Amino acid sequence: MQLEIKDLTKTYSNGVRALKGVSLTIPQGMFGLLGPNGAGKSSLMRTIATLQEADGGSARLTGLPEGDLDILTQKDAVRRLLGYLPQEFGVYPRVTAEAMLDHIATLKGIANSKERKEIVQGLLQKVNLYEVRKKNLGTYSGGMKQRFGIAQALIGSPRLIIVDEPTAGLDPAERNRFHNLLSEIGENTIVILSTHIVEDVTNLCSDMAIICLGEVVATGNPNDLVTQLNGKVWQKSVEKSEIDTYRQTHQIISTQLKGGKTRLHAYSEVPLDGFTPVTPDLEDVYFTKITEKMGVMSV
Ligand code: ADP
Image 1 (tube, rainbow, N blue to C red):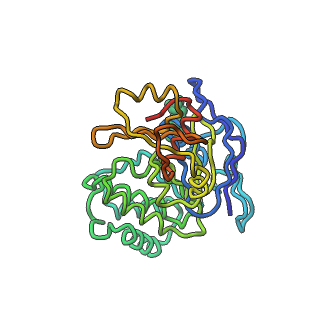
Image 2: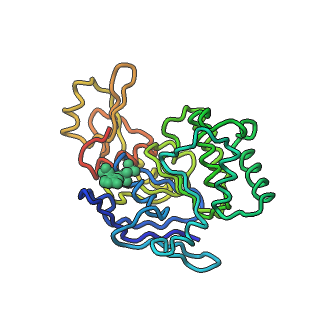
Image 3: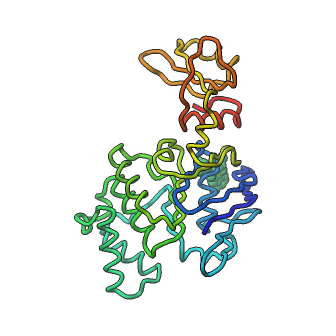
């Protein structure tokens, strides 16, 4: 099974071109969709989750036992195999986690109450909320709400799971728990993790794409993308006041404050005077692609 997206376009009524011909092939496993705020990630995710119409292009799930599915037209069939955790996951504050999951399972068509109970109890254990299953959702922390979100997205054993900006607002321990949970989802499932946090993709994803200004600017295996940058990233410690001068003469991909000085990372195919070579990482890939697209440094 894979998800084939071709030339997807979307312009909102206010004239914003959120998707300018996005093409991606997404295999089974964990796929990272990385991009800065406003890149078009949520627009793409909402389209694949059948919540929003595209203006043009196609999105198909291929290689399913029951035959290919056209995501843009066969919405009901897609929804039956979809799990979606949106960016803004509202919960009913006065309902318990157990009652809410039971309700969602009913909506997803699991009519047998005994079967439903087994599924709900199993999911509560999986996301480590079993002990607090009888507490109202309004009393949950951000991390607990996200884990509840994953539990509801997993009801009905979905084959395609979309997780939009899942770790925003989580503390490091909660993020870690959330990552572990995501990595346990079956291998024969497509999981798309949309995020602006590079580390989430480094930790979890075997394939990825970077989108910026509604276009795909890189796609591939994270390690391969990093390898392509070998020997092309250089660093130098400078005073804050010097940064602008360097920006005018070098392709600066990131700046980071370290011990009162600023550490610059620059992209160059040849050695740079006064700079030392750096072993690149995915963050360098991300910032190189984004700065190439936007023409300025994004952070
Ligand atoms: P991301 O998820 O990467 O932050 P979005 O898909 O939310 O990006 O947004 C892409 C662009 O489309 C942004 O410029 C955003 O302001 C705009 N946009 C998103 N949703 C709407 C909408 N419903 N109406 C108008 N513009 C929108």
